Amino acid sequence: MIRDVIEDDEDRADALFHALADRTRRDIMRRVLAGEYSVSTLAASYDMSFAAVQKHVAVLERAGLLRKRRHGREQRASGDVAAVRSVASMLTELEQVWRGRIARIDELIAEPED
Amino acid sequence: MIRDVIEDDEDRADALFHALADRTRRDIMRRVLAGEYSVSTLAASYDMSFAAVQKHVAVLERAGLLRKRRHGREQRASGDVAAVRSVASMLTELEQVWRGRIARIDELIAEPED
DNA sequence: GAATCATACAACCAATCAGTTGTACGTCAA
DNA sequence: TTGACGTACAACTGATTGGTTGTATGATTC
Image (cartoon, rainbow over the protein chains, first blue to last red):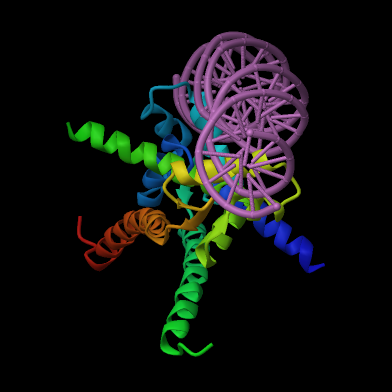
């Protein structure tokens, strides 16, 4: 059913916005969009345990915002710009809803009959 | 200090992404961007208590995503499209970081000396 | 094969979250 | 002035979060 697809979309949106609603994770995104970094290299940048950073990376990965590639014994993460764009397009959709409202108001002003 | 401004920006980003990381709140945003709605009118649309919806509206308001105007005894909410755009611009910034990476890679390919 | 490095994951904890019910207060209509 | 409506907020609950430490597993190096 279409209903379920929409549900999945909402699940995905929840995951994406939630993943971005943490400053450490946003910072990780900035790094992995600029280049490839192993989890331990990333972890070295933050004042928290390796496990904490690893969990942040896992949250971003589950949301589809980054991918990991094995490289020897390390796992290198790189950001997925398409996922970032998909979040941006959700916001554009919201903006379109607003444009619809404005268009309706403009119509009323243009045709003041009734 | 500049440091504190950045901190405030991060606080704001946290609040914005967190506010949008809930499907009920995203749905409220769709409505209040399309028009003005009283809190109780909004509440009638959802299968949860008035208080729950009122709290969702408060979260969106604190994040700056909507504003309320008194109108008689009701409080009408309408979405702030500028706030939505500010979130979009954060994502554009992320995308710029990625573009920088690609540009650097292209340079390496263009000048294979070294 | 042993030691080491990089990663993943479980178990735990305090804090926050999303929901509930109940209460209080301002505004409007009779 | 009394009641009903619309809103806000406090107090509570179970679930989730972001952090911790400890342990297990894989790949690398000696």
